[in-house]
Image 1 (cartoon, rainbow, N blue to C red):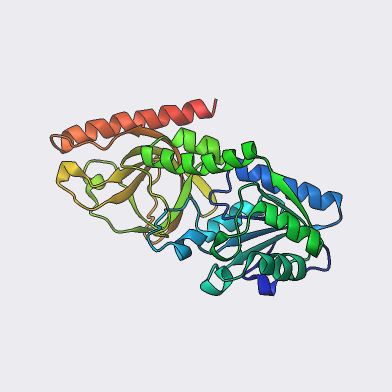
Image 2 (image 1 turned 180 degrees about the horizontal axis):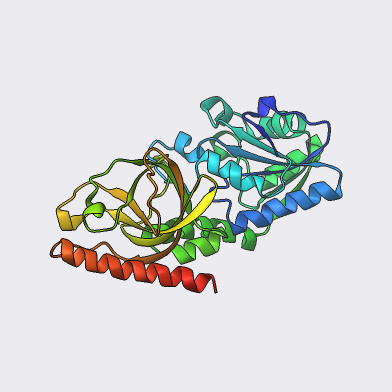
Length: 311
């Protein structure tokens, strides 16, 4: 997959089959659309092309917009690379780009710059300055400037929308199984292992204190989770606590992972955490002995999960 950091840097001698969107999560709904453009490109000796944005357009257009995202740009690239797409353009959605009229976008960007043969897009897609142009306008512009437009059905686009919303809501609610079902893979984030208060060591459960790489990422709700960690090319089983550690009167949100059967020094390593299942809510215990007993139970739950998944 060729990656371009702007529309201006893209060129292709072949016609292109294009889809446009934020593609946050690159989930099962998105995969259907991406499969369509890849298949269409293959059948017509064209190049498949995804046009997406470095920041969510609404974060530029709406000052109050503060939606946390499922993917960083780096993660989105990694996920899109698995879809067999020929070209990915990551365009800055800045004020000048947002000032293009619908017709200017269709003519100057889609037809002339991107060499479009066909656009596959949602029936409710809006574009151009102040989002004034609709799919009906795009069809007219396509006839005028020489490209086809295929509408994604209401049912399919609803699946895409609902999936993104449901994934975010499920992660916030701790329903990781549902989130992963819609994603088609385990929700993940990456971060650097930093020095914590090392409380876990005192009760026999040393943890890696992880600082998430990006503030734009969704953090799952407080609680205990079954996870895998990935570093140095290998995957390791573990359990994760997200919370403020109320048993010791903590007040700062931390992400701590205890890896099973690992004694390696992980400080300053960058680790990717895949979240597999939710065990329980964050709780305040009477003391460290009660906390240790509960963690033992959490560990048994985690071990049973991995034992069953391997059978």
